[in-house]
Image 1 (cartoon, rainbow, N blue to C red):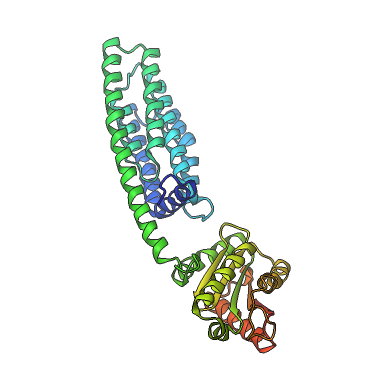
Image 2: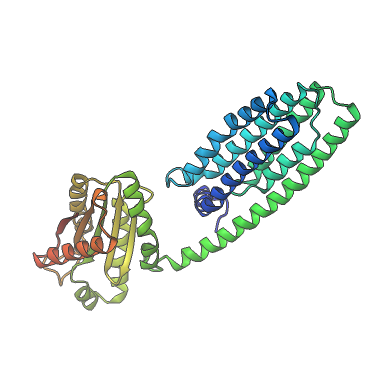
Length: 367
């Protein structure tokens, strides 16, 4: 397996983000809890009626809370959560800026914040779940440098600044290496799992997805259709008189016929999420996403035509060439039909196509 494959890396990022949703919700609530804790600490240190208290709290809430809310909402939306790592990075950056501004605000009363505040921010950055080592190192390095510049601007002692800079560099190097090692371990586990999934989910003869992968992905595709409110088409395709083809030409030629049909069916899908599946024997399933009813009707006719155009000889067929029958069901997401009804509808449509002479399609709408 090529671990440098951009498509594979994109799958990793997507699946990792999806798996991190519950943890990121907890992370969001924890950060809100930390903001409340520091508001209480500020009130204790400054006094409840100190004018600077409300300025500090307002700054902290105004900069961080909107992004925390957006992060929480993103974990609930399928199309937002595929890049949740970026949302976490944005939240982390907002926390960093609010910290630097708070340090300037405290300087108004001649209070010099210690480097402990920045180290606490770095610990949160490196331990935060759901974003990657490059993003963590970027945020940590950025705010470490800004903090050093801030200390110079606020005229901290030069020896203190030098020591803090050394500790910050060492801390970022060690934590960056640890974060990198952890990311590599997570990626290696994903690639190994994906490799096993590919083996288990691929038909060896045709190279198509098999029934196992179809069962695994169909619910996701139906959920995507409901989220986008765009229809989906599912077609059951069966090679006509295939048993007679094997009897006439032998099983080796029969395997070659299956491969040719599989390759041709693969040419009539468009989107990355579309699927062609060898369901078993001479049976195939095609799933087309982002399809309205008119598109589905036009596309259904191409299923039979593209196979007939191959002109594979079939003496045992009344058409004298290999043909297929197709049962096509269009899924209307507005009505939320169950997966089982969709499958039954396509299967019944296939039966109707065969009953009316084969080498044709039958279309039904699932409502």
